[in-house]
Image (cartoon, rainbow over all chains, first blue to last red; front, side):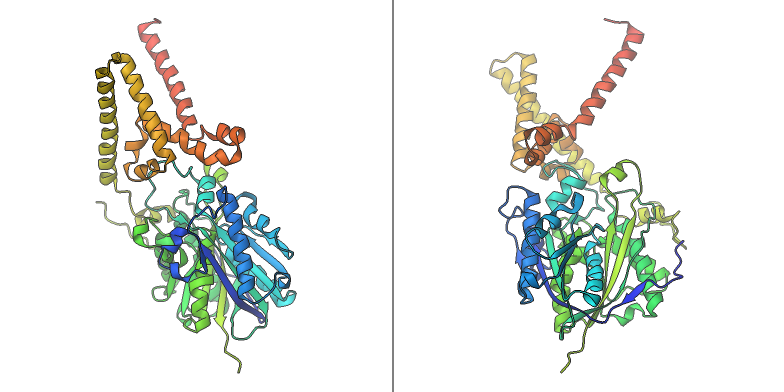
Length: 338
Length: 155
């Protein structure tokens, strides 16, 4: 059993979230949030020869896009932090070649985006002026690495999710007025509840999300109703339902203001079954739809939890269960100082 | 239908059962229907091909080999143009089990890994899906042949 005997929540004073840029694939464009993306692709090869090259190019465009959107120059970015789903996180590392900033590569599977925000917040709070956090995934590169070749005719399990194609990039800046602020973060721990089915990621990750949420609520004394919105990265429809139940058993009501980014991304008719997944999910929804609403003041405070399943095809074939992680950030729309 | 179990407490031990209760089930009847229909149609089409080859003057034995080759070629083409995976999405075993499924299992990785070159990509990964089928098929046939020769003698 998990015990919440020491505080894991950290607080920041100076971290402003000044810009968010999203680049999404064609299927995401046709999805529910299609109109919220800054740039969408007609062709998921992005004019490149391979899907891997396309994913790299997506990272380059998203990084440049976020910099331009914040009215900065590439030289203004002190550090780029990010990750993707490919082995040895090649997409983001190769894309970082094009920029002169310091670079940290991260991997926490689909929880990478929130992980990058947390580390970015540390750097911004104490050392850097501008930090860029980026995370993304591509359906076709992830599918061949984790599952089957694209053209293989297989029946998909009804609990599967669909790896989203896209990249989301955020710029954190020290002290900037009129922008959302990252005010606290809870770094999650690895939780394994023994799920073996690699199709059922939502169920594998839900206990990790529960652990981090519970830790945060105990640390801060806040409750779910204190927030305009609570969002998880990619638990999908089933994982979302499980998390609501798990939280209720801990005494927290998640029925009113809780969404899952993966479950929001696609329409039912797009046949993604439990919804979207992948490192792109939370990055796309946060930098697009959620950020716009924060900026407009429709959402005053937001709890965002990025969830990641930390298995590899090798560990799965060797019969290991799926360990999972969840990281939390609290984002608040600061009062406009007049 | 089994009545739903109530979980008064969720622990690492009972979490798997809890998830199983919550998860949507595969639509077995629907899947079986489509598998039966599509699988049956592919096989019936194979039979039509055999009859056609015979009408065109091919010997019966050669006609069935030709029909198989035609099915394999067609499945390879349909895989290449991106249709076979859509068929497999709902037909399941109906499009996997016939010889066309084997063709799909060879061609799909060949296309996919072409980007890593002809040797380490296409050449090495072509048997990714079909390889285990071939290995186990050969193994089982040896075992069956051994059993047969035990009872019926060699020859």
